[in-house]
Length: 604
Image 1 (cartoon, helix red, strand yellow):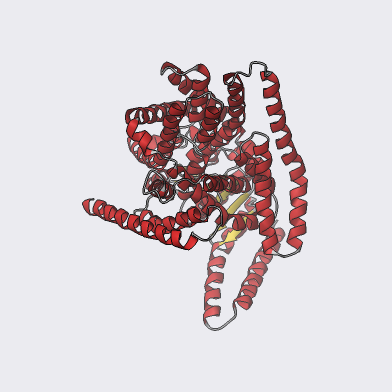
Image 2 (cartoon, rainbow, N blue to C red):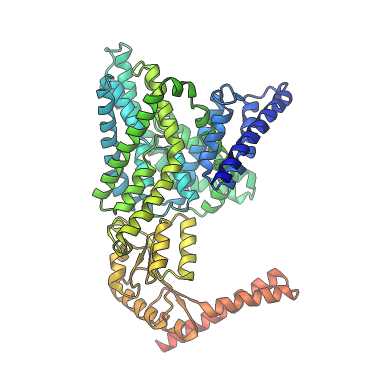
């Protein structure tokens, strides 16, 4: 441990020297070039290249690394960048593209299946946390309007940081990640009434008693409703049509430009209506999620999202004013401790009240305990309107920024807590529990051996929810420690599958090693749930025939696929072209499966 600490310390000194010298070089090179914020962007990139390998070496979160870079090069660090409001606004586009890609990865069907968590649990979280925190600020002596705005601002969490952490840790499709994202969606929606509330309180604070508050609120709601309705109605038909037109040109640059335009235009529309820009981008992604263009759009947007999101995190780090921390050390640390603890307890309790397990509830609470990026927007608007005093705003904003930097550590604490609770509760936590009750349109994997784990990994990468059953207690335990919904149970029993939501599942995958048990399970599934697609793995040709007769939607011949892949390697090794090899393998595969289908029909 001492060696690692010394290495880190020396690494930080080296990095600081590198960044300082690089900053001098940038001053010399960019001094005569009059491009707005060019120097700041170059410094950001140099700092990222210099510092991020250090965090990668220690296997720390990239989010934490970007926050550290911002604090290092900002005006309160080594002051390579005195002020970068424009670059901060560019960084906010990272959040826009992040929500755009999340919308692409969802669908209307999956979103409808999350409505209870989004509207019910998410709405309760915003209201209860906001009211509780507002009460604390009122007890501290602040006015009612100021307390209300500050309370609801801190009730919001960081969509950008939490979502990025879930993706990095491979837990986006796990139950805590799914619940956390549902709450984050509701928080983005809640920004609208919170900003309306800021406008109303600002009108009063500036002596605008003659302003009709109901008219002001009504206009804001009307603008928001019109913006969302236009995006959902016009966008549903127009986006698919325009993408089809551009795709026919076969111009990749034009296709990329259209994807950037779709994200930015919808974000601008909702921003002009008083909504969150990120919400507009999310709606655009959602409209494109069911189109045939989704994979290409995701591939094109990914580099922009990653780069701009990094700039956003760096800009948050730059905003950490350590002079405020020095002069208000007790107030900042006390506020961070109080609101993190309060949010953890409230969110965990609310999550449990919606039928989730204690482990899932605790991890969700820890993931969402910190502040969020929208707190800066809300509080800045309240300061401009004269509702919140500037000195108080500085303390609260710094507390939110420091808490955002603590988010990766809170996620690690949640993972550690899960290992402790799993160890204490033993088999009770490994059996199927209430945490699957809220799942809909998920995939059930019957058997989590080598084949089942591969399927689960692919589903996680696509951020699709799944539940798995396996009779190996160690295997299910290790999967649970990774945040996966894998339970100890006999997957060959239909009643066990019923406990993990088979009636609401979008598909069931049977990967059992026992051929006879797999055939019996497929037959039982087809009898009990005739409309659910059932995909099965066959050990040999006879087993494949049995599964098809039992009613499997599709069967994969394990021995055939292995022999085809091996044959492909051999053919390429002795000089056959890749195209010819692929054509031959596909022809043999089709012939075998078609012959098998004919034999099945004859047997029937």
